[in-house]
Amino acid sequence: MKRLAVIQTAFPGDVILSTPVFESLKKAGHYVVAVVRPQAESLIKHNPYIDIIISYDKKGGLLSFIKAVNQLRAAKCDTALIIQGYYKSGLLPVYAGIDRRIGFDKAPAKFLYTDEVYYDRSHHHVKRCLSLCRGLSPTNGLHPKIFISEKERLEAQELLHSHDVKSDDFIVVAPGSIWPTKRWTGYKELVGLIKSRMKYDIVLVGSDGDFQLCEDIRGNDKAINLAGKTDLLVSAAIVDKARLAITNDSAPAHMAAAVGTPVVTIFGPTVPEFGYTPYSPKSVIVENKNLHCRPCSSHGPKKCPEKHFRCMNNITPEEVWTGCKTLLNIN
Figure 1 (tube, helix red, strand yellow):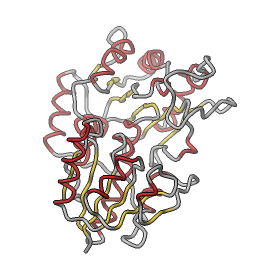
Figure 2: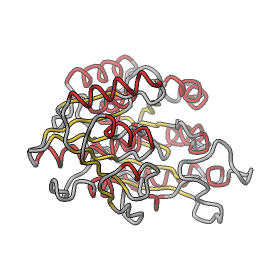
Figure 3: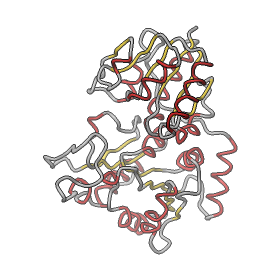
């Protein structure tokens, strides 16, 4: 048995896509330490394939770095799998005295690694993450998972009941993203369209920062705004109960896939070819394929470089609704 640190200090959606790594390593009999951002810690706190979680706030300065190094050193790991490949993540296992450091050959911090693994751009990111496990554990047949406790399920149920939402009879809409150009502009019209054609309730979810966005979309009580009223795991419990999720290219798309809820995902400045689509057979992608300027960046810039934002503005609510009908088995 090895003692392995998995360092994934990217955003919550990336952590969800990395969860098969924990399962792969643990099922092979290894001791697994997860190093993640504080924002993502709750997503994995019930994961049975993780022995220790170390929370590392990359914006916390030197003291935060030293604290994480000391915790990692105390875990006595002999090998580190470094999924998030920037310098701070690469330096953690170096200062923690971990002799073997495995990471991607395209990572900015690759000079800190002892073993480089080919970053295959043609593969889904789930498979890329699992490629770091080769020689350590089996990598086939695994997919992202989120583990939700009964406490979070009850909290989600009570919150839905307080708004007279029937379980399994609603659609979740997650309109936010930390990247402004990843936010589709047609959610308000889509909510009105769905309410005019179906009897489903619409539940809007997101962070505190998404509250006003969701208020603007909600309109005249056509949807229920729960943005900022739940943590990530309670949000996952709500998504788990929904018939369908509609999201941008962001963490809620991966959350839906991880709990098995059908998901329609709207891609704008980014493209599915990057390998970050929901890892699920119950997934539909909506995108504007007829633009020479896509993709314009790896994440999505703050503003459209071409100043027309057609990648999002030209996607109509009818197009998204067509994707919804496919997953809801509606003619």
